[in-house]
Length: 284
Image (cartoon, rainbow, N blue to C red; front, side, top):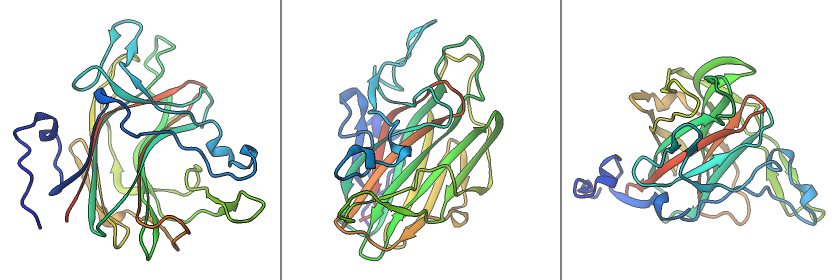
């Protein structure tokens, strides 16, 4: 194991708790840094794309403009990455970064993020965001693993405020006439399970235009495709209670390490996820 990183000389790193080797440090004051929207798999025609992917759009750089206060800006600097849903109840949008790993060990994803509904009404709107969360799409020579966690804020108008995970493998669908291209339905709303002792009241603030930056961390063992940590602000959850979707490896995905964040709306109003900065680290 390498010695711990001396991060104290850089305040941008000191807000994180990385593993010994930093793989990615994205500050969106310097652009999107390779973060993109998700285009669902298809072949022959875009009509082959599964319905869950069709409403998704690209992330954007944002100063988080509010009609009563001007630009909020980022945690530090002017910009963050903004992910916005369509104004249709139950729709999701996400941003992801596609890369690959060079060591089958432990990784850790950290971020500072904020979530809120579009401030189109002068009401608190705390029930308007359904959920936000993190996902990874990983593949070793043993498994394709898809760690997913979300904070379920509200479901059909009822506040839930609990963390959830997915471990049941969803069906995949052939989306080409040649049967060579498949698409996995891992983002559909079915299959979520509550994290043990996963209830958490998170900071929302008092006005629909306000936002607070909050800390997120998740650790993954790539060899075993299992969680090693989950933390949001001051709450640390037992990773033993978290499952991961595991399936046989797919073709053409060797050493895949995709990371992403998503947001869902519970009303016919857009939900926004702002990501200020992201750090991905590893222990090798």
